[in-house]
Length: 199
Image (cartoon, rainbow, N blue to C red; front, side, top):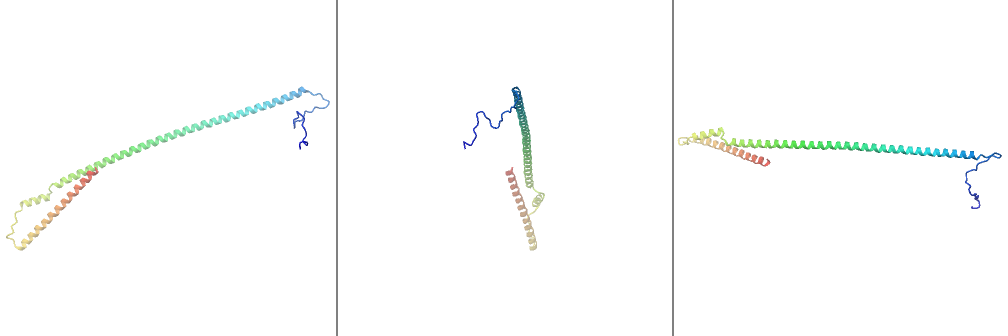
């Protein structure tokens, strides 16, 4: 309760005992003042040292922070340099690869064009050759020119049958050769047209 609490006198500080003055002795206030001044000086020096110690620590932390920032900046610059070099190499490699592919495609196209021209030339030459009479055709023409008209009046029946069979075989052979030449000519025309379209 309010009444149970002891009442404090004005100017009284709890926990601070008043200085004891020995009985019967003379109090040297100068000495007390000097000791207090020395104590205050020691406390002041301690505060100054603490302040400078704290300031020194802060300066060291600032220097360390500055060093870390500079190191990080240097590392970032080095990374950017490495990335730029890597990107340059990548672009150079890409350009070389593109040039190589274009060169290969140009060579391939040139080879294809040369091959198509050679095929066309061969086909034209072959067609020209087929138009020339073969040795066999020349011989047949000579034989036909030399062949006299058939005189079958004096032939007997067996001789006539044999002659008819011979003529029939000869006609079949001529028809077969004619069909073969026509098929070859048709095939060559088709190949020429196909090659011209692809070119």
